[in-house]
Structure formats: structure tokens, C-alpha cells
Length: 388
Image (cartoon, rainbow, N blue to C red; front, side):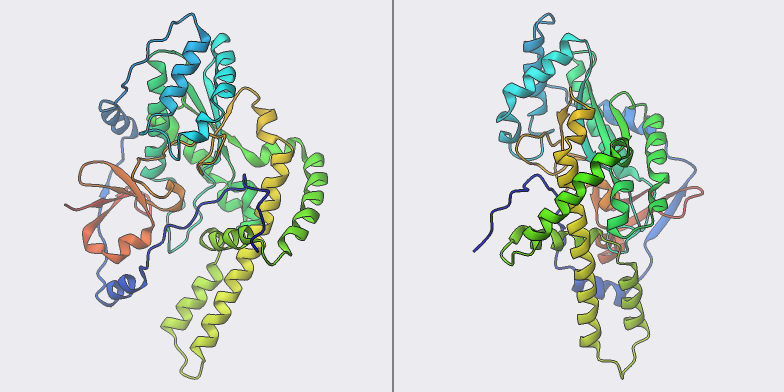
């Protein structure tokens, strides 16, 4: 019997992997390096301006400028546009009255509407998803998309929108198995990217761990209670959500030791070694690590939910998410066809000039289709160009 999940707000990214093992092995057998070229610099501001010229800001609502309720309704209509909204419209429509009341209060005060989204955790290297630890063109494309939504609202409400990105990398690092210092440069890199693009008025960055630290004693006390509660929940063999969460954590958890073990197994194979046993042990180790990570992750999210950490810090903001769910707003990042978020992969510039994000392993399946574009002085590509 499947146990009902009382913690549906605990969200995660499902891996978007395909059955790619054979293609990777075939590519390795005929391997040649990805072609590359180096540019002196990438002009983010010029790139953003060029793309901005093609923004579709229709329809152009014209609510009564003296009617906060009408302006709030028009803002919700923009957010609900198919090209901006990820997930079903019902996620926002079901709370439309509450959302419009909240927005109307911001309008009355002449302030931009804020939408708080916990995301952009960082980019620890992973040979399956990406090697680059710095932001790449994918993050820039995501910021540009958020700016576009704000610009659309500015056509009839000058303060526009501000997306408050609650960077969660430092908070997540301990239970994902990463040294916290790995995540320290990422926020600064993002801020420099926003400044270079000139879109900082539409995006504000805050640190989730800093918000937790402001209420540290409360967090510790509640976290202990939540841990006891979830320990009982997770002990139920029929709790399917636990298994789904553990499976998803395999992609993001730090498996550097397993990567090294796999390389040793393949490159320096010992005929006396039982390969089946070795692979089974490796899989068990990954599962054990993912299980511990998933439990700690869920305890953390349930704790900050019950603390109303974000709601109390940003009382006039809409709650946003990168994982569509009822009652929250989820914007597309990058573009509508992109399946993964920027920090889970690498940026690819398509022949039409559009930017997508893919796992870097997809590049390695067909390296002849791509050119790696480096910015002078950097060690990893800022993006890949796909050939026609």
C-alpha cells in the first residue's frame, strides 16, 4: 500500500537522462576532441541588448493607472502567458485572488512585485552533467528571461518585477557532500554577470544560509523535532516519496570517489577482480550516499517551511519555484524547450542563436556537432556552439 505524502512542498529536479550509455561508449571508441576556439571576451551587455530587441512584449495590457486591483490583475495575466509560465496555469490560478491582493498592496506602495525563488545552488563539477564550476551562458540566458518578464510588466507598471533568488548552495553543501568553500565564488560571479548585463534591477540575490543563520536557535530546535518525525516516516517501507527523492539525489550528490573508482575499474582493469561485485558495491555506495542526502535535504526543507523562513523575510512577495507546484509561480528559465536548469548542465548556442542547457555528456555523445567557445583566460567553455 502506497503511503500518502504529507510533504508535497519538498521539491526536487528529476534527472532528464536518456539511455545514453551505448552512445557514449561508441563515441569513446572513435573519440576525437571537441573543436574549440577562444574569444577575447564575451560582451554580455551587447548580447543581452541584441536579444532584447527581439523580445515579444505582447499583449500590451493597459489597465487604469490609478486602479491597483486592475494593475495587479494585468500582472497576473502576464505571468500566466504560456511563454513565461512553466507548469499548469492552475498552480497560480487557484490562488489568483490572494496573489492579486498581495500585488495590489505593492502597487499601492509604488513598489516592484517581488517573486522569491530558492534556486541557483552552484555548479560543483560532475563529469556527467558539467565540468565548469563558473556560471556560463546558461545562467545569463536565465537572467535575461527573468528580465524579459519584468520588462513586459514595465510596459504598464513602471516598477516592474524583481525576482529574489535565494541562493541555496551554501545551505545544501554539507548534506550533498561538498566542501562549502566550493560554492563561495558562485554568488559573486552571478552578481558580476548581472552587472555586466545591466539587468540587476530585475534580479536580487540573497543567501539562504544567511537567512537561516538569522534564526539559528529556532532552526536548530525545530530541525531536531522534524528529524525525529521524518525518521518515523522514512521507516515505513511503503513510503514511495522517499524512494523517488533518493533516486533524484543520485545526480547531484557528490560522487567524486565513485567517479575515480569507475575510472580505475575501466582503465586499470584487474582480471582477478570480480567486476560484477565491484559495480554492485559502487551502486550500493551511491544509493547509501543519496539516501543520507535525501533525508537531510527533506529535513532542511520541512524545517524552513514550518519556520515560514521566506514568507516572513519577504512578506509582500509571491512564492516562486523552479519546480512547478500548486500555489507557486514557476517561470521558464532559458527557453520553453529547455529541459534542465542552467546549473545542472552547459550552455549550447543553437544555429538559430537560441540558447539551451544540456548535460555535458550529451556533447560527448556527438563531439563532432559542437565547438567549445572559451573566453580568454578560462579553462572551461563559456558555451558550446552547435553546427548546422
